[in-house]
Image (tube, rainbow, N blue to C red; front, side, top):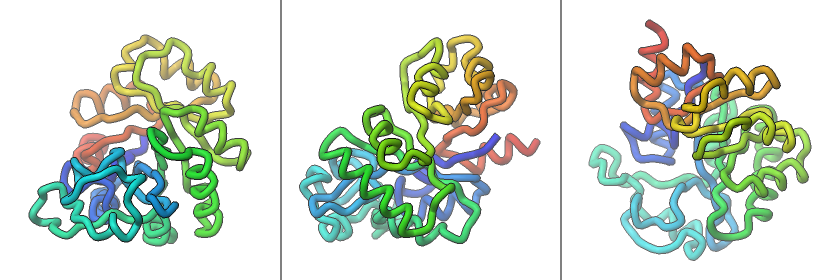
Length: 239
């Protein structure tokens, strides 16, 4: 079972920063989950929320701020050891991990702005940076995933969902998705992992932090887990 760090090692470092991503790698994560959206000047940046209010020293909607304005903010999330942390552009993340073993799960955030442009630019950056085969796109907006596959039929996509689905593999196969990303609560439906695997669909649940849940999901045979604590997950799985 692979370990993917949710927004990096975000229990120990500011989420969606290079500090959190590099720490996750040092902690033994196999991959990183991160979120992308567009800045006001059309740059693909790594940030989860629609606004910067929760995670940064400023305020405002991400889509109203330029890359330079976003880079001027402190994204340390109140963690004194990481004062001055900045959010990266997607290109910076790819440059940092291009020669590493790390796999990247890129979540497309579509609550605001033009998801078609975001998908197009993300795929262009993947191609320009030579990251083919290292990226898995996920989103709660399945139309965005359809757009990714329309623009790049060989792109890997995964369906994000929170509420329980009896047959998530059905939707995955209809869209050509190789994986589903259910919430941990959605896995309360009996047999989900088994039904997905029978159809060749991988299962990567989120967000898994408790030792009990980690052991249970390893026993169920999930293909990867997405966690805030990759160090804890690695320790448990190595026992």
